[in-house]
Image (cartoon, rainbow, N blue to C red; front, side, top):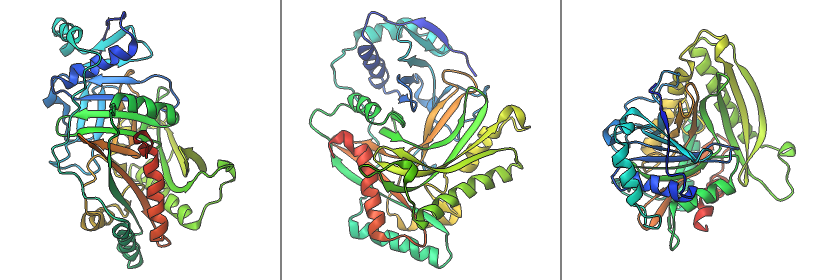
Length: 407
């Protein structure tokens, strides 16, 4: 891992202005940018990459302490249309420490130029967010989506798959005067327990999200964590998560995801893991079933466990299905649109500390277009799934991210 140098950076400017100018510094020169806030924390963090070509990677990132520091943004399925992104941390700004910025050797060699460009930027100019070059994804009407659900249930009945996760895209006009940075702040306020993100890059476009689901995490105590998050119901007035009752369909859907994670551990011949759950958790106005898995890396002979598990897990049964390849084949044939980065994964690696990685499944997200947003939502199908209920579940999930659009 390349170490970052801490320097003072325009401490006389208010933090919001400094953040906006740093984002503008990247966008006005066609560079990628990632802004995020970890769950249950107060301050956002920013990663800027100065070399566009160095931001694209062929494989998921390594999670070991010696791996490069940066921000990962990976698609549901790797393709020429949706390139995997890993932003090296040329500039890293932690809003908890607004008086300083961390820079890589690449950025340090260009500091005079960067400071000059930063000073010349306006705090009020409209930011030129990157726009995807791919066509707007096809959207499904209610009858079309319910037909997709029925096809998924039929595939389960004939034994093609045991579970499949269907999804759909929705187009919504942007409100007058919509500001992505203000929307990011709004998401932070609305969803303190979620991973909040704003990512913009050439070829990728601009994505906002508020996801509740950890894919792979290595924390400060060298513990690897992942979770099974599947099963959904609305959080009704007066309802307490601890007393929520779950239908057999939700319990089975969740169990499939949990069993898949255990099977990934078995593939690596790992037996020393801790499993806690399932329990009911809140995500916005929804309830989910969640089981947590943890491995103390200092106590097992698997130095690359985090990286190996990441590559086995993605895409999990919570976003694809079981078995994985037949489920992906079904989605390619029947879903009718390209998910792009929806249901992919994203998050910081070795930022700000070596050996710490936090990657999340890109759920409850939208893609920004010049005049509209593309929202995404999905549902896990089992043999007991009902088309009308699955449509309604996508409607509930769309409200999480749609709240910032007034929908």
